[in-house]
Image 1 (cartoon, one colour):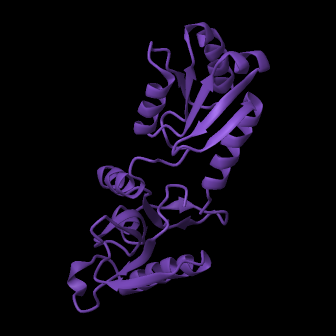
Image 2 (cartoon, one colour):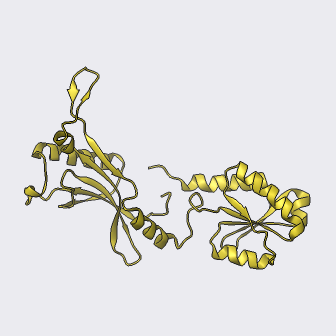
Image 3 (tube, one colour):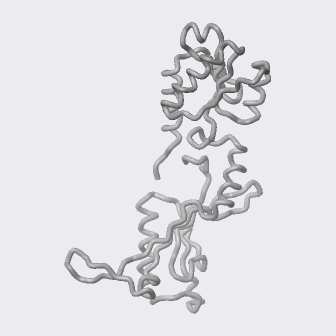
Length: 235
């Protein structure tokens, strides 16, 4: 998926029929809510398991379970169908027939606990975030001080194309800057020197060592957008 969680489990969490006292609401509403979640999961083509006794006290849930580095399952995103709280709060709305109707409440937490989500994301990616998510998508490394003005020009062009970048203008060798950018897990290193400035290009190196050579800023922008679009999947 867009966040790199490929190996997740969809879980429909329903009532424990042996302990009905744990839940509020009528049997009829529970049956409707559980069937609604099961139908939605099937419509989306999800491979899901049904877990009895894992529902909230007010309604069933569609939970997305992700494993950590030790193989333990954790709930991240959850969607819950609730027919009961609207009744307890006596909620109603006027429909197109000009009559009052009882709404269905949807509880939705796309990330679940934010702290748990960040912990699992770091475990799964090792800090190599998807390109769309990483705070700094590119770092511009001028070969020497005399190329800093061109580096700033490149930065401005990238920012105009909504690419998050920065310039490393420290008085260090390019080799050291590359090593530190690798350690910081910045996806792209853009090295600019005399030839790049003369040709209006940038020399692109990907995190991990792949050298893409000298390309135009427009070509690099297209490359970034293509990679982002291929990663961002709709669900």
